[in-house]
Image 1 (cartoon, rainbow, N blue to C red):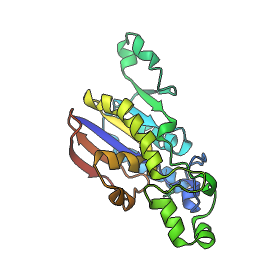
Image 2: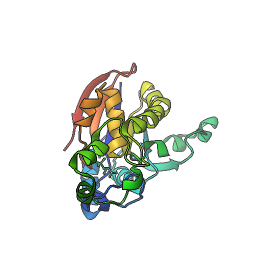
Image 3: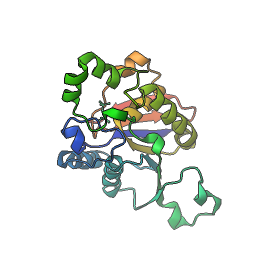
Image 4: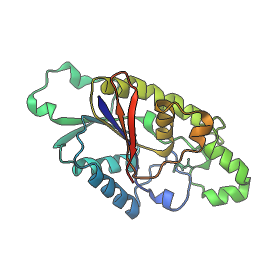
Length: 227
Ligand SMILES: O=C(O)[C@@H](CO)OP(=O)(O)O
C-alpha cells in the first residue's frame, strides 16, 4: 500500500487579483505562504519517499514549505531532467538514500491559458460574456484562444503520471505531488474515474491536501481531504 498526496499550491498573487495565470510564473501571496505553512503543519508527520512538482514557482515554493517542516524529511535534491534518471545508475550510500528526490516537470504545469494569461477574469466576462468565459474555464474540450483545453492538459499530465508516478506507487512509495488546479484536476479525474461533466464541477482549493491510499494494483482504497 502507498499514499498519494496531491496538493494545489497556496494562493498566488494573481489568484488574489483574480487574473488568468496559466504558465506565467507568479509567486505566492502572503495568504498563499500562510496556506502552504498550514498544509505543512497538517503533513508534518507524514513520510514522503519522493515528490513531484511543476516548473512554476508557486508550486515549488509550496512544496519546499511542506518539506522544510516535515519531520521525516532531512534533505532533498531537485532533479529537473526527469527523463534521464541518472542517479539510479549508481549504488546509493545510506546517506544518499535519505535524500528525498524532487522531480520537476513541465507536464505538471498549470493548463496553458494562451491569450487569456494576465487578463482579469471579471474583465474577461465583460469582454466575452459569462458563458464564453465559463466554457473556457470549465468545459472539458474547448480551448481558450491559443491555449490548452482541459482535455489537452489531461493528455500530458496523465502521460507523466503513468510513466513517473504510478511506478513509484506500485513499489509502495509515498508520493507527494504539488501542482496546480487544472493539472491536478486531470490526475483526480483519472484516478477517481470521473466523467468530463464530473470534473467540470470539481473545484480544488489552494493549499488543501488530498490524500489517497492506493493498493499496488493502483486501486484507490480511501481518500481524505484536509482543510
Ligand atoms: O488562472 C489559472 O491559471 C487557473 C488557476 O488559477 O484558473 P482557473 O481556475 O480559471 O482554471
